[in-house]
Length: 339
Image 1 (cartoon, rainbow, N blue to C red):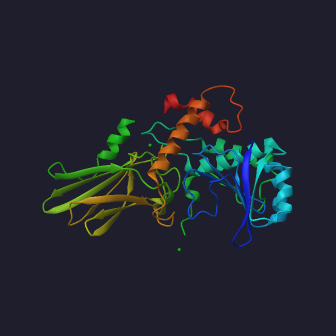
Image 2 (cartoon, rainbow, N blue to C red; image 1 turned 60 degrees about the horizontal axis):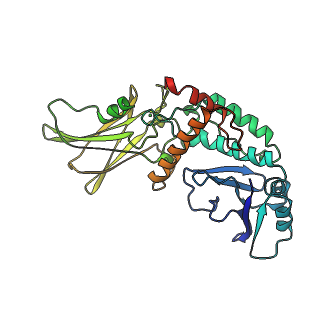
Image 3 (cartoon, helix red, strand yellow; image 1 turned 90 degrees about the horizontal axis):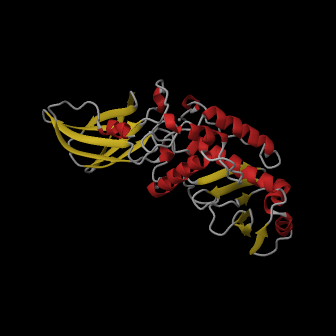
């Protein structure tokens, strides 16, 4: 895990130790490919899509951070930070504790997977076993005792009911395309399909495919109806609390209509009436989760490609690289034939 990082000071007295161009928590919005780990005195980040093994660090409290900088980046960088008197400087990374540096990545990645793993029946990406993932996160936290912030709350992949909202196969694709509530006599005026912004719903609720959401515009007895369907995430429980039901924002002409989706079998469905027949966009969200405008379908596809590649690696033997598959990924790869 060698390479170079640039050391600099930024506004607010913060320290940044990062490979050139690497994402940090100072960015306006982290995309779904960014792994974040809270550590004493700051945060570490990695970019999955760039295959970045060396973390970027943003440090707001240097004394506790000096307890791990030498282990992750090397003694020369720890000394350079301590003696820093220039605007920027570039140095070579040579971790004093390479295993700890590797486990820090694994811990951050495991916590990332608990939130962003793109489980999809449509795309054939098996879900991760939540208990295995939580157990591995707990084990990695123990192995990363030097670098884990004791006051930080570990990310967990518990059941969806843990989310308190504040003041996934052709058959499934077809299911998504058949919206409910349309009579056989209705005139179908249009159809469409697409993906959804992963930032705006909790994990494990909706299939992560870019073809998971579909809509159909129909007209019957003088009324125009838009039916929306979204394939549910694999292994989704049937008793999802009402406050976690996704809602659909449907952009039509100069207005937006909204409908709540309810789970029918393996599909979330809902419909709304509108005077317009032209649907320009359908967005899904759960109230209180995420913010609009953060999603990037290109990055989501890269994340799917990474997940599929990791499952292929997990099906092989003797992978000892720092980013070797997690136990939950190995179990998911073994279960793919049944998925």
